[in-house]
Image (cartoon, rainbow, N blue to C red; front, side, top):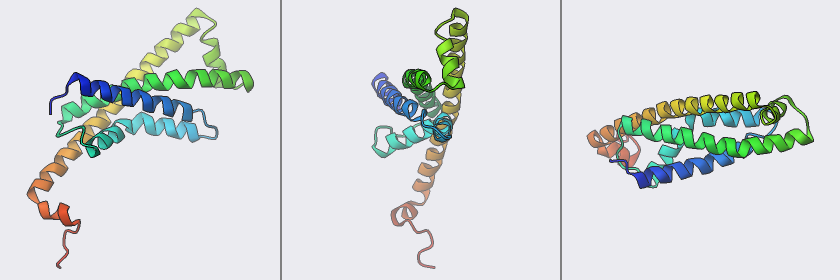
Length: 166
């Protein structure tokens, strides 16, 4: 399948929306937000690719295309995550003072702290893109293996039972 600009734009918009939602959910207390962020950080591309394959938006993709899609998902969703996470954390920091919100708030008061915050966000964006590229490539590879297996054994996928008659 050839990746076109319209499909990549749709994937990017879907990823930004998911990033916005996860950014809002990451502010939940008691390690729920951290767990959501770690799952998002490692496996968002796999989930989006599986969803797009289920609704037949993506056809057959190669490992390279899966990596490209994973990179786009990782970068755009982290931008959406930051857009929703930072303001909520600053508002919560005004209400209840904690360490992370004070770091984010101080990033907007001093130029050096702001530059450090921006560099950290760029680093995290690239790291998220790298991890999601790997997850997208692995997901595409697994789909290639399943497609090859489906061609070799079509009856297994139709019935769901491999050794039904034994």
